[in-house]
Length: 459
Image (cartoon, rainbow, N blue to C red; front, side, top):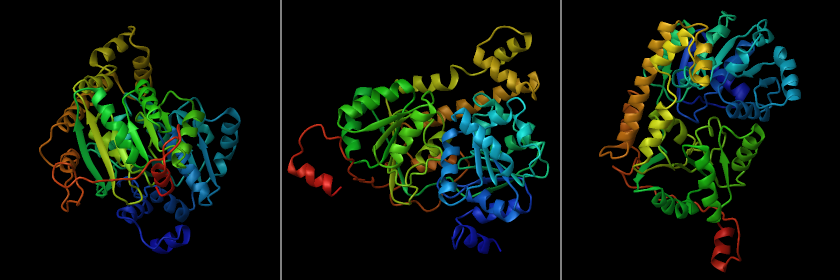
C-alpha cells in the first residue's frame, strides 16, 4: 500500500533508508523521532502521510530559509495548498497566507508566531492530522537559550491531542529523545539510520594565524566548485568576502542581521550558480536545495560536532564526492569560548531573575518566556545541563584539531554511532586525500589570455 502511494504521489519506486519505517510509525499514530542523514528526503516522511491521511499537517520550523525552501519545492512539484507565515514577509504577504491557513494542506509556521498573542486561534479549529517538529535537534541545542519559544511548543500541541507528532533531524545526541519526551510530555518512538555521509571527505588544516589561512584559501577556491565558507561572525563575513572579491571571484555574504530580501537574493544567486562562493555564519544553509555543493570550508571551527555534521551535510547531496575542510589557528579557541559561554545563562542569573533584579535584557526575555511553564528550580537544572553539554561539545571540537585517529570515527562516536565500511575517501588521516578540481569562473577584471579563455569555455 505504501509503495503504491509513493508511486502515485511522488513517482518513486523505492523509499530511501528509514523513510518507510518512519511513515509506517506515523500512520500508526505513534509519536515518532526520525533521524536521517542530510539530503535523504526527510520532508517525504510527512508529505506522504499527509496525502494518505487526508488531513492537514502543521510544520513547526525554526528557520525562515528552511520554510521558504520547502514551500518553494512543494509548489514547484505542483502542490498549491500550502501556507507559510514568518517574520520575513511584508504585511500583505502575511495577510494573504493567514487567510489561507484554514484551507491549506501544509501549514508552515515558526514557534514564535504560534506562541505570539492569540495567533493559536488562527489554527485551533483545524483538524490537524500531524504536527511536524522540523530540525528537532534545535529543541535541545537552541530551544532553551536561543529559541525559547520552541521549548514551549507543547503549549501548541496540547490543542491537538488527535494529531500525530513527528520530530525530524539529521543529527541527534542520545539525550535528544529524552528531551523531546520531557518537552512534549509524551513518549517518542525513535527510528534512526545514520548520520554518516560516505561521499564527503573530511580534512583539517592548522595554521599559525589568519594570514596563513587566507594565503591557503584564496588559491584553493579557484578549483573548489560551489563552496560555502563558514565563519564565526558577520564582521568576518564582510572581511573575507572582500578578500575573495579582490582575488577575482564574485561572492556573497549571509548572516542573521541581513534583511530577509538581502538573504533571499544571495541564496537565489548561489543556487543558480551566479556566484560560486558564499561566506556565511551558521544562519545559512539549513534546508537549502542546492545538490551540487562540492566544498564546505570552516574558516572557524563550529561550536559542536552536531553543528559541524549539519553544516558539512550541505555538500554532495547529489551523491557525488565532495569535501569538508576545517581550518584552525590558536586564537580560534578564544572565539569558540566567546560564542559558547559569553552570554550563557547561569544559575546566578536565574537567581537574580527570581528576585526581580536587573540582568541582561536578552537573558531576562528568555527566562520570562521559559518561566511560563518551567519553575525557577527547573530552570536552574536545565541551564546547568545546557552548560555541561556545551562544555562537552567544545572539548570535542578542540580535540578535532590534533587527531591521530579517523576523523569520521571521532565525530560519529560523539553521537554513539559507529560505521563498518570505510569509504575510499574517508579523511586526511587514514585514506588518500580527495583531489577535487572543479573550476570556479572568475569575475573578469582584465583581458584573459587564450589558455584562460579555454578554461572558461570548457570548465
